[in-house]
Image 1: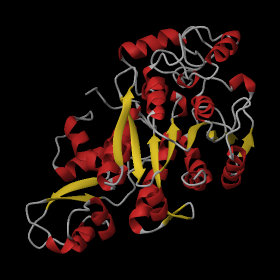
Image 2 (image 1 turned 180 degrees about the vertical axis):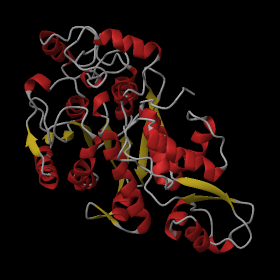
Image 3 (image 1 turned 90 degrees about the vertical axis):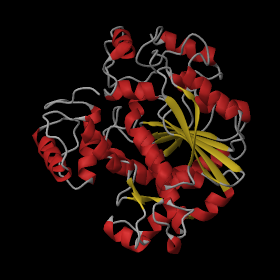
Length: 426
């Protein structure tokens, strides 16, 4: 574990501050800095749990904070326990406990058996830098609190990180959503994960998501959600990866592009290849355009790689998509509040009409894809190969990386579209 001493600034401090906030200790603004307010909150947290006193953040601190990152605790059933009593003790609900423990009969609790007790907050954080470490804790919490969410992996990143996919639904109609092809567009990851959590909660409770019946959606559709296509790039862009050979290599590459802020401007993977310029849809045309713009070598963005599908992340997406029969894909990027719907002269049936519905639901503008940026992307290849609707959703406004303060509006704009995407192509 690295040293997080007073004054340290690092995205991992967001996790400390998030855990303390959820546990009821006020560390001040979540700002990635281990400052005086965070230190004082941690001291109170330690004292209440008889943890060792230290200047820096320690291993026991992380261990004690984990329940407030994953959103649940494990409890051994004791004589006299009931779901109602446990819900009151942990300030949660009976419904949440039932959802997390589908094989347990409430009036037949067996002392000595283990229960999962969800805590009284959503799992998906929407106020932190969404690094690969944040993703790890979030996925762990979602899988335990909502056992109907199945988690698999489509491959590994260049840096060896798992590339997870979350499956939700039991129907034969399949759709796929993905986020964070680009490192500094990490805000798209919590957009998709919050939608999934809201959807799972609504399905379990008999409620709605985006004004649609969640149980009916679940029964007719299966969603394949890839929340972070480029975790190495995300960690470089957020500053979570700031030591080691991949960081040193990225630093050297960035020196050749001094006009691109580093690390904030990092879109590429750990080899300096833009993952969304890697797919076999006029890859040579994309290379010609990007080389003419000066992106002739690995760097923070817009380098197409040596060949199409040269990178493990793009190959994983390509191979996973080929193994499934997706009726529609949504690729989440930032920024512009725009929906791009077509690729060259390929016009899958109903693709424009579906795009118009999405535009109406989100308030985003439906636009044709500019020629200069309309090659070698995941959506481009999906449309070309399958002749089915594929969309690039550009969320938010401003300069990437967008501030997390935009999250609530972005999610409000997109929730109904994400729900409609599950069934509109059926």
